[in-house]
Length: 369
Image (cartoon, rainbow, N blue to C red):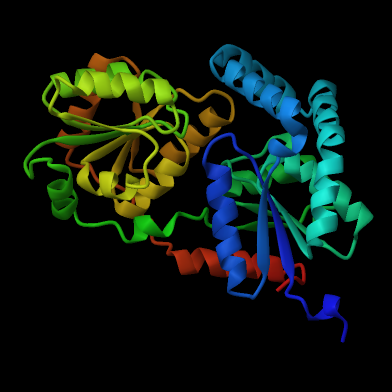
């Protein structure tokens, strides 16, 4: 038997640095594949664009995120429609990243390629034409899909909602689509009790407590909301994520507000959720994590484009309310949720092992497992 035949099977996971959600799915997928003896490697699609291309891509994304009208216009009129402009940009990105992607594949020799980022989907589809013996999958991290997620030749599309399945079939009616639970990091299944978490943080047992977080980039008027909530008597656990400027402002504000507890990028989010009564957040991974911990959600409409679609899906799932971005109105909304007799979260019943079983069954449906 040759060395190639003896080596473990390998998976290449193509993530993207825009937000933490893509990495969370990639890491969870790699962990699940380990149970099968499959070795995994995760690469960043934006990094594959090269130094200049990577910086340009991130700068453009941040710029349009700061201009919601521009982002909405591009998402709903171009990406959803799969316009010539959108397809042209997708082809241009693929041309730039393809040599580096191919170098990675030549080095890693994957048996499975999983795209967890739209740009990676185009690369996986092209690689499938070059290497039809390699299994290809696309894991769509949003509630629905725009056109650039979908390419002929992908073996299986993994989607977290029925809406996502219908969206894929809009672009490719005969696509093989499997519904899988969106993974949540293990720490949230093992979150401490409210009492334990509050003691660790110094939050009084009888205090009203809000976790305020808005993605890895800290999108939206978080500093204004955090200070107003704290000034109105609520304990506020405010997470800036990787937004260093926001973290500095939160720490400065907290210097003379004992009820405001600021955090930067932290691995204590499960503990912070456990200590809170309500989670105020944009749509995204936080919603799934809050459902696992069992906390109600007030959702800020601050992420345009796909963020608005994700928000609508979270509201439909229940246990979530729309949050006003005006700080004063947000205080009233938190009070309203806490006073509401129907105040309760829709707790997730899935476990880490359950999601892994769904993933492996989906890959088995195309002969990988």
